View (cartoon, rainbow, N blue to C red):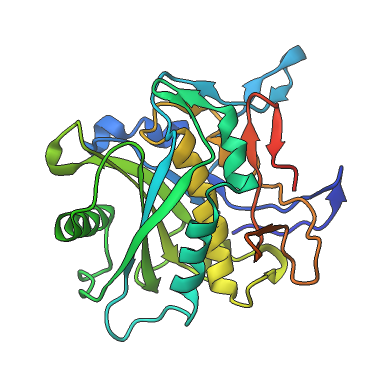
Length: 300
């Protein structure tokens, strides 16, 4: 479990937060028989060593591995909420609002310093559609294979697209995944085993205050601590999907761009605790790492 360390150092609020798996999970690709590896965010996940910098001291950074980025994104959300399960009353509304707001925002704009085999990231993300599925969960809770099946069902039922520039965000209700040990993860798979139709997705389980995935200090600018906590994870995973959608673009031994700045939230500038307002809507978000600018952006 994570501990919270108070203090403002060099203008940044430093908090000991969940840490992502990096190279260790990438190496499981062949073992798991997956199309693509999984990249986790969670308090029980060990962080790999950083790069050796000048004089052998640790240095932050990511390395380009030749893959594509999401130059623009079309975004879809899937809420898997069977009858009788719990999500806070505004949970879906607030997360969808963030996904609508984020295109053109400073947090999304930080990724424009990255390019991939298919071009430069643009500050363009369009929220297209959202569905709620009340199908019961499998016994024991949904696995990653079940989540992929759920996404594929939504794609087939609604005629939704696939491809490297499409993002799928899938959410489950409270306690659907017992003690998951992570806050969220992102990965990809080939739709109907067609390598020309990748599905890029992230999963944020409903953990609320469980497993150390709650907002630090209980900060909740939208008066819904579960939604605001999930939005932190959604933003983290979204920016990593943008810069590393197929897990073969921008990452380093220490993780992806969200991992490097997972301690950095800047300084909340209002009584609500928001550190960014997008289209008039308040959010509390972490920064992400810009390799080109050699620092966490957008300097919240």
